[in-house]
Image (tube, rainbow, N blue to C red; front, side):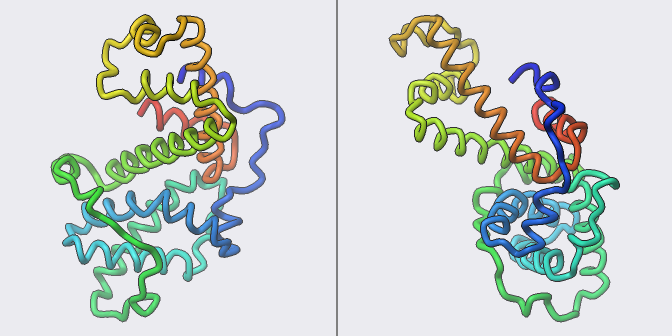
Length: 240
């Protein structure tokens, strides 16, 4: 995805408030589902790394954190001019863990009830265990956040292109960008394997990439308040 900077911050682009600050604060079920989906894995990994918690303790603390965050009126304290929502969330998470260590015997928030489903088998990988010894909790949070944003955006891309009848664009994109043997793959290789001309391959790739960029930008706009912040998030995602 090239030329990201040139497509950001147009005259008509405005960020009156972050989506998370409004929709989540109103307890909109769809917004809460998106919020949990985007952040539970980074939060869980942060807790496992910063607190050196066991898997079960980290799962419990992750549940408690979201109760703490949603029930404590913290969204109302978020001010856009103080930075990106993602940075704010990490700061709250640090404070939560400090309070949890201090009040270790205190009653669990939310009565100990689970407010989201956690399948940690997908994140408890050898790679993650190795990362914990060499990365800060913030770095691990950001790496998982970036991975989740991309994976969920690609899932959205599949749904959008299929619904629009652009399955050929999706087929070319997946073959070129997502293939396990992607390294060294050329347009000529795709032309031969997919039975397309080089012009068709290029057009299909351009269509899919442009749509993916739009999807990613819309997803990231939930947690920023200006075109500059959106550009920074895009750069963090693709260049970090």
